[in-house]
Image 1 (cartoon, rainbow, N blue to C red):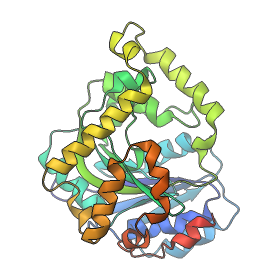
Image 2 (image 1 turned 180 degrees about the horizontal axis):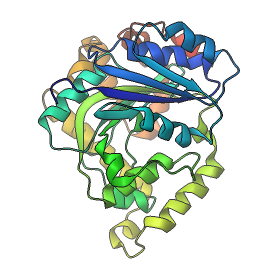
Image 3 (image 1 turned 135 degrees about the vertical axis):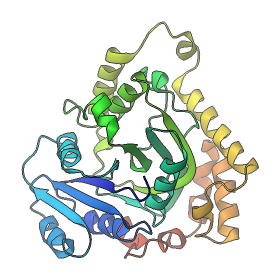
Image 4 (image 1 turned 90 degrees about the vertical axis):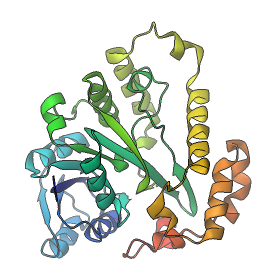
Length: 315
């Protein structure tokens, strides 16, 4: 695995307002041995014109045809993929320029089937780091009281699909959660690296805003995988476990050297201190500091595309 091919799959349907940002974030990778596979569901909003614009500018493959939803599109992309390392990145998510470089180096040095990092979450002018525990607790996730993997910051060997199969098309929102849980019960090796690998954009059209469908799907997952006799899960509630996990990750970051190395290089020291101060605040106090949060353009500028926060505010 000297310079393995990395396959990035993007399911798409009528996301012309985001897909060009997604494409630019992948084009600008410092690691160049990748293919970008966009599986479009038959968009009619100008997406196809954007794909044609970029198809000869980098290693882009794309198809546009009706599908049965996001996970059906991802499965099509997996079957088209030639890479040793795979990931899927939704149209409204982005990579940093260093993302693939860091991931490939990690797969070379670690014994892991699945590698994940942290995310930067953007919602209008508000930004936050979404931290994840060092150890992925798939059993607790199966019972509805644990954090899932950060999907845009998760990468896996193609051999995983030979072990576990593909994403279930019986889910609209949480097919990835069901898939990670299957990987856990299959005994696959997960490893977290301390780096922010993706930007997640929250907007009004996010699929996960469909709370009712989300509850139904999580209950189906719980019924399929959860052992109700798990006393640990019964004693500690979802809210407190996740808060403790996040605080532990913050403490690890503060007292450990070289965490988030690439991310720290992209912003100035004062903004970095503000960022840490904000993240250490209890949730009930954070709303007071939204207007004082550091200018998101400082971090967006590391993506060499047209990432203007005013455009994000209007979408």
